[in-house]
Amino acid sequence: MASDPDPAAVRGVATTSHDGRFRDDPHAVYDALRADARACVPDPEYGRAIVTRYEVARALLRDKRFGVDARRAAEGSYVRRIAGTGVVEGRGDNAYEPPLVLLDDPGHRRIRTLVGRAFNARTVEEQRPRVARIVGELYDAVAGRSEIDYVREIAGPLPARVIAEMLGLADADPAGVKRWSEDILWGYDPERDAARQRRLREAYEAATATVRTTVAARRREPRDDLISAMVRARDEEDRLSDLEIVSLCIQLMVAGNVTTSDMIGNGVFHLLTRRDQWERLVARPDLVPGAVEELLRFDCPITETARIAYEPADVDGCPVVSGDVLTLSLSAANHDPDVFADPHELDVGRDADGHLAFGSGIHVCLGAPLARMEVQLAIGELARRHPGARVATERPPRRHLPFFRGLEALPLVLT
Ligand code: HEM
Image 1: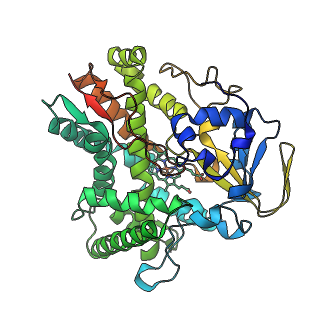
Image 2: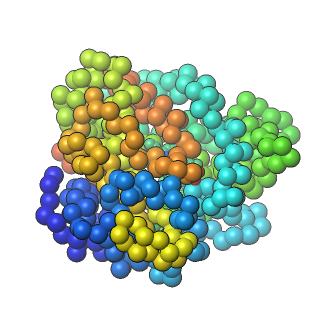
Image 3: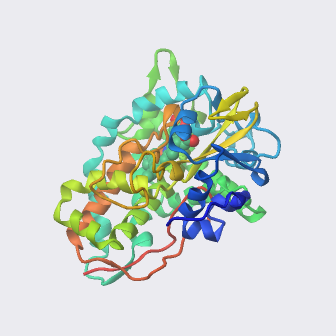
């Protein structure tokens, strides 16, 4: 997938899935950007500069001079159009609490500490039998069929069912949870139109109402679920308010659904279209956890994130001033040949440690242990039940949601 250096390609949507060239071959775009002498390549249309090199991106994710509060970004930068969900702050019952990922310290540290008590690696590991059961039920439902849409029937519903059960949204229909999360995620599209904005707001209001009712019920009578754990979570005198719990639940629904579905869909597509790699996994199930890390590196579902300069700085030779917005391409960093040899090759035996698919620093993905578990179980079970599975189309359709990379459908032939 080598490409001609063509930095002029960086214009607005050029590194988003709204751009057909990027959708088909993002690394043609990224390789060209990485070939530019500048570590930060300006994109005047989106009011930002793009970073593609691993070391620079990783250092920025951990640099305290850069933050995530879009209100501190220069006028005209695209982050001002994607900040939050477009839900206005302080609207009575639907008052808006910025998501963790858009909150700086000390507010971020406070909430992360409290939620970390409810959502740590041990709590998540305890969910393995539950997740395995849901995976088994989804595959059972397609047993005996020769053709399925893997995204619609397995990869799509799995994370929605897992998070709805974990949170304890017993009365919420998982299909509804999935729809809300997708509609809310469009808040990250700087090009979204009025109809999208309306769907976003309706989804946010419906999700808020459902979660709020459950939070109130768990305050009265706790159960063995994540909402009850959040209600209980305390750090000395500090605790989460109802509004914070509602906001966190919506974040977990939004951040954990489309990303994980995309990861499973992308991963299965890449494995089944590289038969030698698939056969290795079928023969050696113990390779699955490492293969999932390699798939995260190879085609990460969140392609990029942004950081805002809070003071003047020099970024690998590029001067930045307060308010400048840097887009850090996690996808490009994961294909930096200075860090990963033959980066455009998928090798399920590779040590992909250090990839940036889950970010790095204080905002590193809170749900990474859960996402890893879901992807490992979904791919491992496909290899066990359907070793002869094949992709039924050469070019499965890709979604057009910027910064998130996933398939809309993945027709498979099961044998
Ligand atoms: C393969 C699936 C996933 C990928 C690739 C992914 C990726 C990421 C990335 C890159 C970030 C950091 C963004 C930044 O620094 O700007 C992040 C943050 C976050 N993720 Fe994930 N994620 C996944 C699944 C999940 C799941 C399953 C959950 C929860 C159920 C989740 C919850 C969160 C939360 C709450 C944050 C914000 C953390 C903070 O700001 O402290 N994610 N994720």
